[in-house]
Length: 92
Image (cartoon, rainbow, N blue to C red; front, side):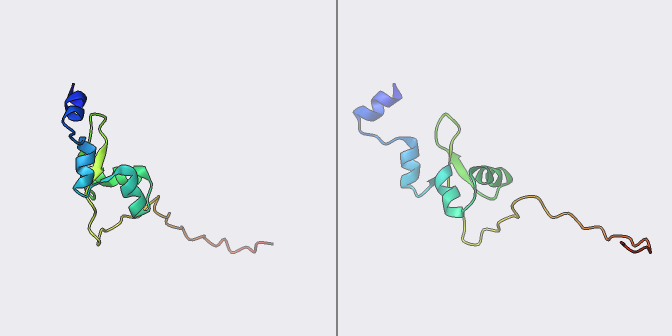
């Protein structure tokens, strides 16, 4: 029914209106930032990116991040190398 009313009166959909406001879809913001889709979602959950729900599927549209966005390290942190203990014997 909503779709019928929207088409009858030439109204734009909610995602289209969000895009008109300068917001970007998940794929678009991931491409802009050079990260994968799940990274964008993780950053949103951690509060680094903000967005709005665009439809009943739970898809988000994101505000453009500030230019000084502090990007957290991606991936697993390096392991602390443990120093090898010398046994006093040679390797040969």
